[in-house]
Structures are given as structure tokens and as C-alpha cells.
Length: 392
Ligand code: MG
Image (tube, helix red, strand yellow):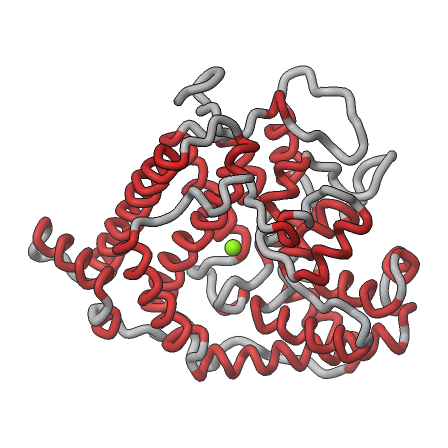
């Protein structure tokens, strides 16, 4: 069902937003979700994404994804699917571009290390989660506006940015902001369709680019991939259409076909689901009791197989593990030093929140190369993390 303009009635409508934490005068030429998107693009944390590792270390080669290119790919996918389904594209873009703002340097290795040291330093701490940290960035840590900390985004953008959340963190949020973005992790309600869509666009993007970067770096073997049902199917389709295709163009064509099929499958399966549940508004979506954006069963199981493969073959590849061990050591050492000598951090950080959380905020905001530079400055030891074999 189409609502005002080209939006479905169950799409998020900026005119019915639950608003910002600090009321603001509306902008003359942009609606509230467009304004959120613009604030994110101009934020400090967004600029730093270009120097943050996705899977391959940022400085390992110019050919691999960073958090910035990943976020742009997620935004492209989410917008494209949103348009075809009559969902709000601007909200999807805002959520996608902000979803990884809370990531530490050095990818998941950095996150695990920071979580570990934070819990050790403060047993009462709820630990480090990158989704929760993304929300902290847009709610508290950006310092750009005279009247408030953070970017003062709308409820709907914040709801989408907080993709997952532990019960502990949800309770913390709920205490500060009753019936706010933490509530759904306590009462089992769902987020907007735009938030659900960005979550799956994230998966589509990283499955595709990890295969691409993985094969081109030499860490994944293309032949091995063909044991999996989805890559095998699209490899065969590519060869049926272009029998002489080989090398990178064959890889790209296989990935391109797989990517397109996921987009079409997601839009079709979700539309069927929405039709069967019949939400009339965006709030009905929140009460639907289950996500209404989902892959069809067969695509879902094909993708699960790809994920298991990538975890085993790529994320746990000895070369990736070797560099991540080094990265973890850098994070642990930085945490130790800033905890013992808070004056080594910019003054704002030591003042903002007590102890360990301030140190975690400071380290989480660093780019890969700044973390290495700080490690060198504070310890005199220069760490080289790039894989010795080099990337393709
Ligand atoms: Mg992501």
C-alpha cells in the first residue's frame, strides 16, 4: 500500500518522527532524516572510517574495503531496496552510514581486545559492543554543536544504529531514556523496516566484499568457494552467459549476480511477509512480533553456508589471525597506559566519564594508524602489522 508520496504506509515518515532528544527548529529545505544523514556525513567519526580496518588491515593495500567503503556499499544496497519497496531511502542512508561509527581500530580484533580489558579493569562494566558504541558516538561523543553533545539525531536513526544490544546496555539506556531506543531489547518489539533492512544490507555487503577481497588477496581459494551452493550457482550462470570468462572478471560476474539475486530475493520475500502480516503503519511493524524484512528460506540457508565458510576460511586464516594478535596487543597496551596516565589522553576524555569507559571511548575512536602511532609514542616500540606475504 502506498502512503504519501512514494512511501508505503508502513514506511518511516519524517513528518511523524518521534523526534530528537533536544528539540530543534526544522530545517527549511530538508526533512529530519535527510538532516540526520547530512550530520553523519559531516561528523568526525565518519571521516575516520576511511582509516579503519574492515577485515584486512587498512594499510595492507589500497585494494581492500575499509569501514568507509563498506558503509557506502551498505547505504547503496539499502537505498536501492528501500526505493523498490516504498521505504524511506534517506533514513536507510542515515542508518547505513552511521552503523559502523563505533568500531574500534583493527576490526573485530580491536573490539574483542577492548571488551576484554574494559571488563578486567572494571568488573561492574557492561563491556564494549560496537553497536552500542556507534550510538554513543552519535549521542555523546561528537562535539560539534553549541547546545548539546553528539549529533542529536532522530529517534528513528538512533533506533536503527543500535542494531544489537546486550540486556545490560539496554537497561542502562532505558534508565537514562525511558521508552527509548533500548526498550526493544527488553520487551521484544521490532525496529522500523528501514532499520531491519539496513541490518540485512550490511550482511549482503560484507558477504560479497569479503569474498571479493578474500580471493583477490589470495587468502581464499576460488575453487573452494565453488563447493558452496550460491557461489557455484552464480559461477555457472556467469559461464553459461559468457563461456570464455575467467580470472577477475569471472569472480566479479559471479559476485555481481549473487549480489543482485540477494537484493531481489530480499525485496520479494519481505513484500510477501509484509502482505501476510498486514501492518498499516510503521508502529504496527514494531509490534509485529517478528522481523518483516527477511530473505526467502532457500537464499537464507545459502547465505548461512557462505557465512560459516568465511568465518572458517577467511576470518580465522592464519595470516589474518597473526595480524589480529598483534593488533590486540596494541589495544591492550594503550589501555594500560592511558589508565595509568590519563593525562596522555586529550583533556576532554579524562573529564567526560569516569575511568575505564573514558579510555575505551578514546581508543575506540582511533584510526588504525593513529593507534599504531600512539603505541610508538608511548612505548617507543614501532609495530608492523601488515601481513608479510603482502596482498594482491
Ligand atoms: Mg557493517
